Length: 259
Image 1: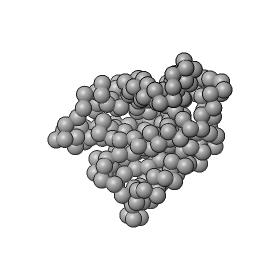
Image 2: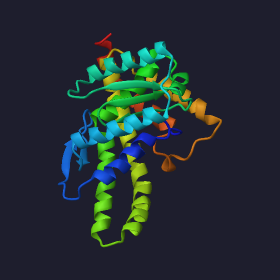
Image 3: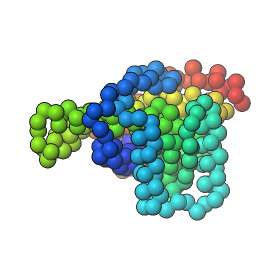
């Protein structure tokens, strides 16, 4: 979600996918919603959803769910409203607020979306929280987790086919997915921003709040320092704000039609 965010759920899902991936699967192509970008898909939705469900259960076992019922209901209610506005069908959405002070949110295949309690200190209004939730809904609908797993699987298969030993393959996979995987993550984050602005606008939340959200995030991370963008899996807040401002002319009429 932000430059300081750690996407452990995606990492877990990627590991599970690597174990379940069958090299004989034929590469598939898909298009991301809103942007129309072509995507490589080597994993079926059924496989991805199963992996997402397993990772989700592991996360819930390791991270306490927030006992703040009002905040929990707020996240769930807003998440469901945005998910409905996305128009995506056949997804078993689940929105959970976790007790964790790290300002983080994440999405897993199958519509499993988690928000850390620390994010509520950054997303101070409903519209700002809607920015977070719509962004994660965008990840799910665009199948970004499945795309990330597919890229990792494709690299593993290519390296394995070259005759490199299993241990060396694992090391090469780690190296090969380093900068390349980071680059993909930044692209996916930017795409989820754009998709999320559309979804929150349709749900009647003000997309202009996305600017304030990232200003809050920038202020919160300034003290700790932020890694250079090329070493981050997320675009830096300044670039996100520039892109959001550029997209507002497209999404504000949608918002005004839904308030």
